[in-house]
Length: 440
Image (tube, rainbow, N blue to C red; front, side, top):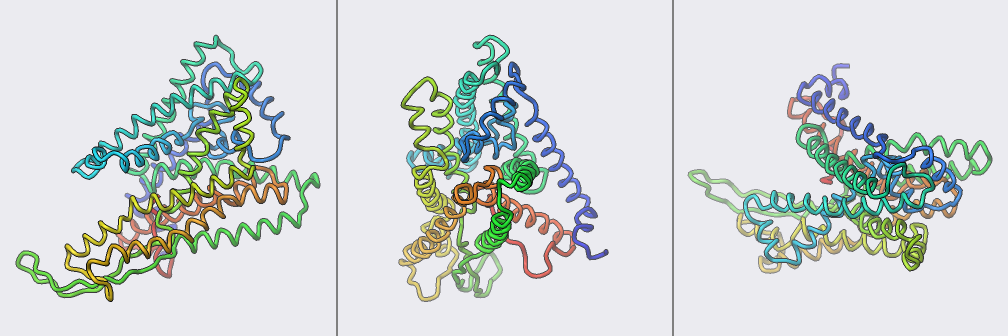
């Protein structure tokens, strides 16, 4: 028992406090997901969504609700989750690339804090837009609103916007005082919270003989294989050797040394999938909510439904685009080559002036297969739903964004716990090797 890693986790006071703080914040998040916004008739909501269950497919409402941990169908104060924040991050990162003035600000000392502050202002704007759309969506549900329309609109917009901003604060607190990346853990908690209900629905389908048990076994086996492939892909990396000559720093001389740059097969982790999901969700939510009143929006919403071919094609292309985009933002070959030269380093067999070209070629070669793999995993729920007629929640658990987020966040959190254990001279969570962090 002395060498049990789980026991050691709770022996380290600092780590124990961090874990309990993280759990406490996640409990607050789950409680908030059940508190409805004022002016909503929960019985009318329940009857409406029960009547929609037999429509089949993975609808945009089901998709949003799944990643909000059931908060959307409850019309809770956290019904938008943190997706508005992710949308604002995408917009801000694109603006930084487009406008040189913002790029200069981001490169200044303290510039990242300014960009983060602008992102939060943008989050409030996105929340107000989405919250207004949600109030219009409630109009399509019979007897859902129990107060005057204008009063409900104002209260709902303020409540939902405040809820999303509060979630961002919770995420920041978890990152600073807890374990793991707070924003990623909130998404993770929302997905995990839907697992019991999804498994119960699957069991009922099998009992009612609506699903063939053989198909269930096949899909579960596929799920295990996909998880193994995701872990393998998330941990894989290409090592670029770098040699450093002797250097004099102050009064000390440092000898020549060899090291390497670890380029991961998927440098951006699950970020491309999250970004692509957010980009697709934002217009679809608006189109579906306003569709009953605007005919062309209704047609657009049906054309871009999550189980349709246009959605899958655009979604796949967006994942590949964001994989390249985010890799260029976080791993700029020009900056990496500049840092290597400034520190007296060189890549064996590569001339100094060709270093940027070499690094760009390596990145392009490893990013494309990684992005295609991400896209394949992301469309698995639609394939399972279409081929085996699985319940939507179960299909989304068997692959796609949910699986990538669960594996990525789990690896990231375990790596941080292992780092705390080793810092306090305890063994890590694994005996062989070390868990490589996924910076989400």
